[in-house]
Length: 403
Ligand code: PMP
Image (cartoon, rainbow, N blue to C red; front, side, top):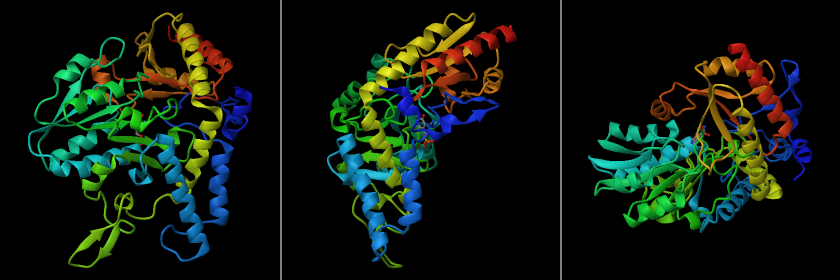
């Protein structure tokens, strides 16, 4: 893999921040976008912007074809059984809210959902919102010192009231790659479906929903070199069919009268209103990019960056890294001594180095770790060893400055 050839496809990497070369290490929050995705958006706005599924016009048909071709592409890419199992959403958050809102129609007071300590708020709060209608108990799988889930406790959390397991494939803070295939098998042995939050997995790991046997799988395009405003919910047809619509509006209906409305077929039943059809069409270019580089090459490169940077960071006095599982994606959450994460992040920014600081939308995990927040550096396929060197050298200066 030639990282320079890859970097050349990302125009933003040429920009300066505070007079320095941008070193973008906030890929977990959002990744950068290759030119082909930007060009696809521009092309559609300049040639093919007409509302999907509505028009008799040629350009409306072309726009619809582009959107639906992406749906087929995503279905193949995930190894779904049919494109009817692919629902486009605004992102992972909306995908999880959709399942929480619709699936919970069949829940009853006292039912239970199993989550984990390392969930993003997007996979906690939607389940709590059900509580406005029904009393639902969240049961939480704890983590060990390395930031891995305790599967023995997981097994013990199933009761006759369990209705769903909702778990992230990869933690956005610890980087831990969870054994979701095994967790799904355990849930299925108990007769329980599983929703996987794949937001941090799809940029790094080849996902095969059939192999995992996931019942729902959610992710966002913007974290995988794609456009903002687009997400995917994969759902097994038998669940999507029995779930009521999430929102009402255009596209999701078969017939409307003031007395009674019937709903459209899958997946349109869940796609009320005009979708971000430009973003959806451009998502297929992000998939092209990933396929062209290849997951094996992406993983090899990111793992090299992860182990090299971790090793160098560990030489810095007072360095505390959170998440040390051997099965870890290229995310490094850390603190130096008792220094505030924000101060470290600000000092890195003065050198053009973009990281994230704070609780990373995972406050329950922060409580479990006994901290308020961390600094998080996260890598993508376009990052280099030279950037890692500059990052660590700056951290060394920051550490000695902060004493
Ligand atoms: N889940 C995880 C694990 C995430 O990292 C994120 C984004 N930080 C989300 C869900 C939410 O994604 P989005 O904001 O794109 O909906």
